Length: 75
Image (tube, rainbow, N blue to C red; front, top):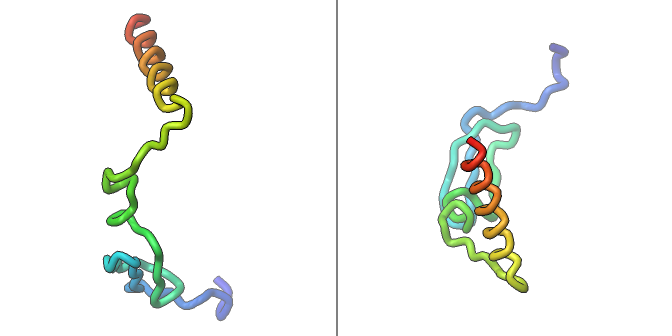
């Protein structure tokens, strides 16, 4: 590797989320802040809400069930 072209690497860098959770990661920045993490993201916490516009979610669920039913029958 060439000398003096790579940024300094911090193996114990700290990342803090707005919810208060702190992670220790490896990074080129010693400290970073983020707005959302796996501890507070609605998708990962199970608090996500499906917004149904004109029954699109129901249509999707019907198509998905129909597709899996066909796969089971073929086997």
